[in-house]
Image (cartoon, rainbow, N blue to C red; front, side, top):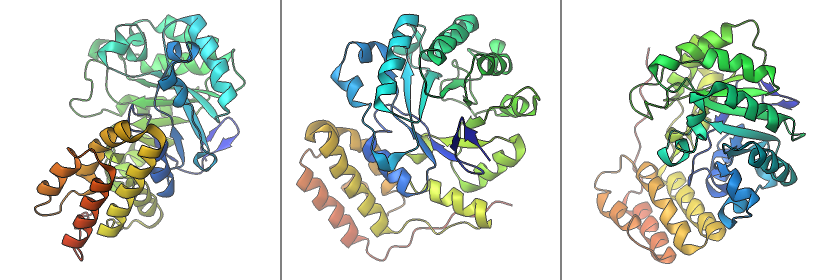
Length: 336
């Protein structure tokens, strides 16, 4: 049973990875409906929080039905991290998570995100300061290391546990890899074998099917799995994995009506939360997966990613519903 401090997440929890402009309340609501056990906000700049920047503060929005939920922050300055931890605590999430894994250049160049992997003592210092600045359980998300020559995650896991973190999520790539190549979970498995490690270890990277989730669970012994890109436009991945873990069977794919209904809910909630212009814009990355495999759908998808009017977009979705009524999506082939 995986527990983060006193938060019971069950036998094998599935977590939604924090993704900028993706894991907002509208998307989190869909993932929760499909069985996600714990979610995180988009990562929030500590500098933005302490300056009371509108976009950063808005990311603290939490809804009761989302719980348990973690707020993820990133930064590089000790004082800012400590002050931000106090602000996050006022939002009353279950967990405060520190992002030490974002590989994006504009974050890394400030020695935040995965940039801190170049200075492990500083990483430990920042983590200890945050742990001591809040009553919330503190967790960390990071990567294997900066590059192939500096995969220090086994040392990092022990040192961060020693300063008080309550769980560690690890993406199976280095910063230099970004999202290229295959995620390597070998070192994640070695951390689980370390008798000194007693906090939950959450694996992340390339989980895109129920079969792979169970295979990696068994092979590497992780306490849970965090899913990121594979959930975009596909919140059903959580229920599919849950069903496969429980029964060993592949669940039927979501129906056309489920896909259209989810896209409608997502769009309307997005517009309600962000405003029409931004809500419409940030929905566009989801449509390809919502309507994947429909023959000849390119015409409709082109409208969905160029149209700005909400009513028109809803109309396009209803056209898809009518045009493809009765279409049966292919079931995933179960691997041996």
